Length: 184
Image 1 (cartoon, rainbow, N blue to C red):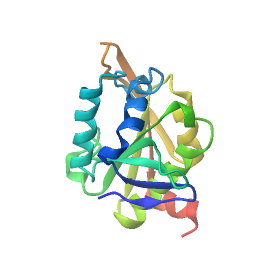
Image 2: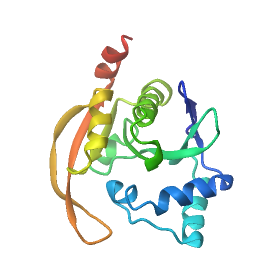
Image 3: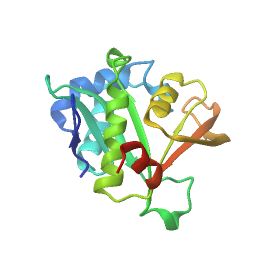
């Protein structure tokens, strides 16, 4: 189960009590497309998606504000399907999404740095990878602030919900780079 905290955030498993915040995020037309999924505002569909996350607390977890307890986003440390499967126990892919009212406040950078700490120091990973679509400048800024190294562009790798085929920009951070950044 993924669980850690940062100065302002608690990253914890999703709960059904997070439904209202999750529904708001899922239905926002400016959130999902940046991560490759269609916005959804149908309460029953969103409830099923949330239920799946609640049942798998080691895959996708909630980003919550410590002061309010409100879920404001989501993150996961996944097996990277772009990498050799034999490396699945050494490499994780960081994915995240933040609801629009919380953009521009440093929350995602804070959560991503916490996820790196968790991946390297708790899980013992050797590498963390991350990808973003070319049009997602906000995610690129988070990635750069965290100190990831740009590896290249994977052309035409993802078919989005609307049929558009997209490139992905690929970044990584290995253990030595993480230790240098954190002076360990």
